[in-house]
Length: 214
Length: 276
Image (tube, rainbow over all chains, first blue to last red; front, side, top):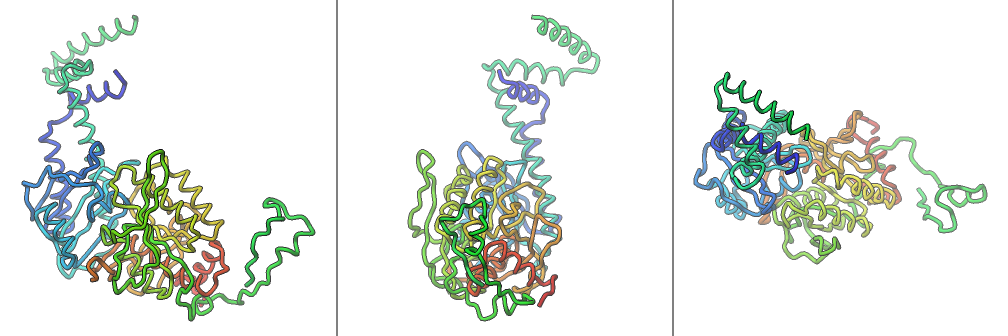
């Protein structure tokens, strides 16, 4: 049992549910849309194992039914932004038929303009945030670019937490692994009433002492 | 300005007294370096500009002739595979950069080096392989509107950037406007570029507070895009080819300039230095 997997196991016991994390992603897209007065916003998450971008959440125009959809990680604008780590702002993109087709497949909605920014956390590129169709006749400014950068940084931190939680839950759900016992213990402890929790912690403290003396 | 080729009989790390005459330079820098001296009358002819990106769409009216297009990948055992590329542009971005460079330097030789398209995993290795190939080819200017955040590639990228610098290849790289540590734009051996909001393509600023060294037009730029058309776009990745195009113009007129001399000329002709 590695230290990392133990940490994950303990975290799994106390972290929020998958629903709560989806709500967080939904909130990120909602806020992005509100900040930029845009018609839609969406988040794509990189699945490193399959090297695919996964459509995680959408706010505004577009179809929720596409959430969960996957496509190759270097496809289209989102792929370019992910791989190059550079944000992009494009307007009048409707004239590009290939772009329109790709977009329709990815989000169910073809915008006239978009901002796409990589979600970077430390060395890792976690995904891409897109903000679609800012108000017409509003010229893009560098102040917006800075705001987008700051907001994407916050979104990347949230995504990183989501991924940690998913890894941790995978440990918890795999009841055959040694870490699962630790995870269940952490979960049980976090759900106890305060006085029971205190007793439980005393018991665990005693157990820890015994194990350390081995 | 005389261009002195390296002499094989001169050791690289010392200069004996009798060798001094061999590296004498006839200096004909003007009293004042201005834009007319720097690129007046230049078309960028005989200057090769490599666009390290998503490919370039062939036949785009704003791009014109593309001398060569290759796709770079990393084969088994880490070998670099460079193949002629008939895919065109997988995204539109490379075409946009090529169009901007062409708008400055109508007679430069554009070369597309596609390092994107093979997915996220392995993209850092492909980027390195593509840059190494470009440096080996001796292109005078390499436009890199991309970066990596992976520290494992930083040292190798640094070596490559220094190697380019000494081989007279100018790497023009997009700076990040996000709170992240990324490469190669932070290296002093490259020319790093951020955006300003002015619509004048020839307006560019020297930044006295590096690491970003120059600011060029990067907001609401009309760019070449897929399908032979244009769209409007913003981002440092579009500011970068503005500086790359200027570099091509300057090198077209003064092919003997080394990267540090070229950077000095850019500094002296920058809008906020006002040497003209």
